[in-house]
Length: 428
Image (tube, rainbow, N blue to C red; front, side, top):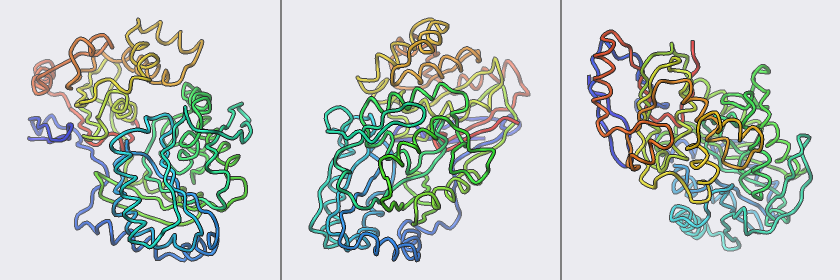
């Protein structure tokens, strides 16, 4: 059977006999798609939009949105949403980069989309800023109960209300990508992100668990709790709304508008229903993050492995299809991501446990996974030597890996995950 997986800008096809193909898991897809515009119009017809407009009338509104490392269909979102912002006396649009590079072509594209949509909606009094965790000015909003000092962008200080644009998916240590993350670390200083992300080493900081979850048994996530405390320190008593979506490859599957906690809770339940699966662990797992921008580099692509690792047995193998045309990751991540990962695995774990540095949760979790498995094969554009130095096994023939698995175990069952950055797998 032919199985297509997203890889960079294109698709890679693998042949797997039907008898050996376990599950092919992809993000939420629907027959007879409704369309982005229709779903957004339905979301913006909700009664909560009138409450929002009353809350922002004649006031300074701050609109927070994710940066260009995500694949949100902002063109459609802005075109439908901006008419609802006209009652604000001033709108400040903040692109929430967290610790990502602010100066990218993708972020510049978002800026242009904002300008175009604001012009069409007749919004004249606005500005746009791309957050920079190193160079911006920050206010000390206080500290969380876990000691994270919340240094938030000074540009939020004069806001009288917030609107957060968020695409929700499972997140391997924050529970879910969600509106809270647009505040912490989205508009915070580097130091705040580093302190918060040190909690990623706690095994309770994992996917599918968040303090706003409907299920009380799925609310204890130290890192997510810390982020929520930080958000509340920033927001104080100012009204905070969200337009939240769930998307697959820029196609919106679900959209809601309303108070941030209410909508986020509903989004988490929908993601759990549509994009999480319980599987029987297998000896061979094939994983694709879902193509660009989700496999732009190894730093970004790794999250697909973390979200699907429960689907492979101890001493099993993963075939990881991630193009990584930009290589390992941004230069600033190298020292505490890749350079640490190239050390002996025991040393990786011990050094990070003794002194956490931002980005080092990545090699920590990578090292734990690598030690548990026989091999992680990587099909990518990264030079073989760099792949091997990170304790991974490069391959230029992914079909050959599958064929070898079947020679070694003719009755093997292979699980395939495409779009794994938006999927969470639980082991049965």
